[in-house]
Image 1 (spheres, rainbow, N blue to C red):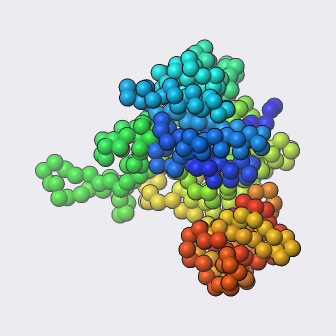
Image 2: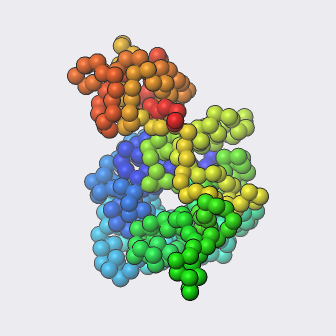
Image 3: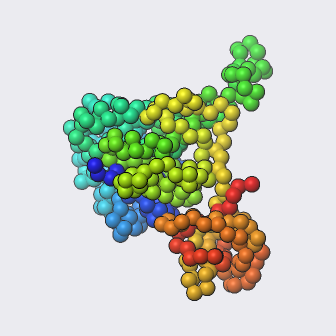
Length: 402
């Protein structure tokens, strides 16, 4: 059995680097147009080239999302964009629209991956996409383990599936609710996540009276999905024969990308080392990043259900404080780009790409000009802190959430 690819989200160039440094085999990114995450930062054309060059220098891959449901006005600009992606060495494009797919096939030599938005739920559809020229199909999230295994046994093509991250309540993400309520179309990359809002019922003749959808006094989030987490059954996922295991989250933080990628990297590697078992530190790490309650979704039936009925807010047990840019081993000093409030006397934890996480009290801190400081409250300030042991560049500094 071949080791599956670990595919991570990258909303910008920094997240791309973090994902690869923390162990992803490939990343999926979006340009400024034609992807389904218009508010995820995304990449300029030059940043796309930089990202591809960085990934290829590590022997890794970059896939670009071109998965909108295109309207006529989109078609005019697509040829030049697709040709540009081909020219900079993008490893594949993710597409859901048949017209966009045909353009990419006609105009480029890019590998063509079929996006989850295409809603592929059976082996016949997989075979059809393969006959049209697809090299990989991303399966719909609505499939069970048995259905995935059956598709794999029937089809000679690479398959990809989501193993972690936020889920959309609408079928394979095809949703008109955001556009209907706000004018921003989720199928064009501008989703407002209207499904996670708090709703009540109003009766036509009593417009000022609001009726809760269920008996919970806090209201009802009837379309508010839990987050997917297939770590508890990752061995079964791997044994399904899927080629690529995908993490959701191009709009998530650097902290999220680093923590989740590291857990799944270690878990996949442990399976192929013959010592796979769910480790407490993996569960703890997934709790430290922003998430909603976890579910195994459709892969394994979960009696607790897939919806949250009390809040739409994500939770996390730690706060991200900064990124280690350099480490001076002669002085045990880390140069940190600060992202949250650091204070002398604070208990901090250091998450490293390939080494153990460790904790310590922050005892010494100076600014960029080596002036002693007690607190660093301003985002992206460069500071220097003394650490109790060596750290790797791109390590993340965090603290327990109060």
